[in-house]
Structure formats: structure tokens, C-alpha cells
View 1 (cartoon, rainbow over the protein chains, first blue to last red):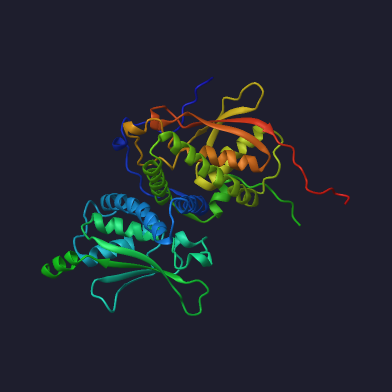
View 2 (view 1 turned 90 degrees about the vertical axis):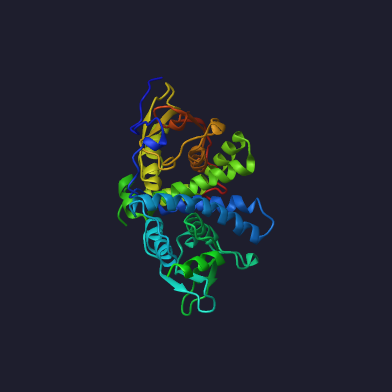
Length: 195
Length: 186
């Protein structure tokens, strides 16, 4: 057999490889197919919805941890946000823009609780081609994105509980997805001292 | 109606909605890691990735046919070219080179010119038997099965294992004749 070398350059270690600029794209369907396999596989591994959400969140967490490292280095010149609002806007703006091609629709502070923030998206990318069967209740594949957010926050030193919820919108056929972020007490205590 | 003209991979890719490749890459990485944790055996992970790819392939072929306007290929050689130049391009934004044909014209190699799955990836010593991109072989096998071609798709070279390219071997096992559920004159 005649050997034909590929056009991809070889490096002795992945660390020698120059960091990509993050401009490369794949088709949305390729991602949608892959994501659907992720969800379907995890469905075979669980007994209930809560467990399924937890597993999707775990998968997302792993993405978030890497995203933080990569984006802080590439987009922020190795600077990492240390304040609450800074890291939230990093998630809402930088992370969203690179991963989903747009800034998130909104970032709001919870009105009832001091430690809650919400990132909302009218049509979350991962939910684009997903409809939830009636018997699966409030299940939201956005759990994966909630996991990404938690991965970013946790690894930046802002532990939080992050969950995804459908919120019905007046006059809209499809509900929007809200990613609810509830920071750990220690985060708020630290933040209060920093003023 | 104007005749339907097959579209090039570039043309289709330029017109479909696209997402950042890093989201795709990292999500795939998360899947592989989850499988490694759940299934423990690298061999099982290879199988599961192939199965996932197969599931994707059987669905993806519809979108491929609808968007590319490509109709029946005259022979397996054309099929391979179409996969390499249109199929890969339209979904992953990369192309492959078709090479190393056998004499019968039933098996060939696809050498990837780029591979969005492996950005940031390095295999640890414990995963040396892992075919990290095994999902791709499943996709090709699944998609071809839907257009009546039974194939066997295996990795020949894998840069994560120190080779100098990503090379998939596609072997046509048999062409399944199409069976219609009804006769035309009934």
C-alpha cells in the first residue's frame, strides 16, 4: 500500500501545538446529532429524570472547566475574573459568544434571593431540535449548559448550584430556558468583604 | 421545475447553520470521558462510539441527500469521493482524500485533511487501545447502510497513536438490492 501522509501537522505533544483561534466551525446538525447521542446514551444509564439531568450536567461541567482555562488564556490575556459580577459577565458574554455565537439574551439578578442570578436564552442552542415527551415532565437538556456554567464558575473559585428551567413566555410557542445560578454562601461572604 | 444540480460540499457548508467547532470538540470529549468512566474497558468504549456513530449515520443520510441534491452514484468509487468531498465537508467543514484503492475497486482509504474531533486531545497511557474518533467510522457505516451498501470501516492510521495521518479504510462488503414493498403496476 502506498502511504499518503495527511495534511495535518504532527506534534510530539499536544502542548507544542499552537492554540487554535477558535474560528473553526462545524455544521449545527453535526453538533445536534452528537448532542442527541449524548442524551440518548445517558438515558440508558439512569432510572429517573433527576439522574439524567445530573449526568448531563456532569458532562457539561467537564466542558466548562476546559472552556474557562482556554478562554481566559485566549480571550482575556491570561486574566481571570475574581469578582462576582465580573465572572458572571464573562459567562454571559465571552463564554456564550464563543460557544454559541452570540451573547446570552439576558443576565438578571434574582429578585427574591441575594445569591441568585439568571441567564436566559430564548432558544438555547442545545434545545433547538429537542422536544420533551410529556412523560418526562420538567426535564430540560439545558442541564448540559447549566453544567458548562457550573464548570466555569466552580473552577474560577465561585462554587454554585446551577440548574436549567423552562420558562413559558407570553405570546411565544416555545418556552425560553433560564439557567439559574445559586452561589455558595462563601462566595457572597467573600464578595461582601471585597467592597 | 429546474433540474436538480448536485451541490459542492463548500456550497452546502456555506449555506447551513454552523456552530463553533470547539463546542463540538469539547462535547465529544465529554462523551468519550463519560464512556471511559462508565464502561471501563477501552474495547467497550470503541464499540459504543461506533454504535453512536451508526445511529447518527442512519439519520444523517437523509439530511445529506436532501441538502446535497446528490442522487445515485454510478459506482463505489464515486460514492467514496462524495463522502470525502461533500459528506465530510458539509457536516464537519473538512474534506478527505480518497486513496489506496484495491484492484477490485471495493475498498479504499479516506485520509482526513483536518480533524475537528481531536483538537486538545492526547491519549493517556491507559487508553492506548482507544480509537478516539471511532464515531466517524460508525457514521459512514450507518449512512451507507441506508443507501443499500454494507461496509466495514476501520482505522488504519491514527495520529493520536503516533501515526502521520488519520486514515479510515472503507470496504464494501455487499450491495444490498433494493426491495420495494409494492409493485409499480399494482
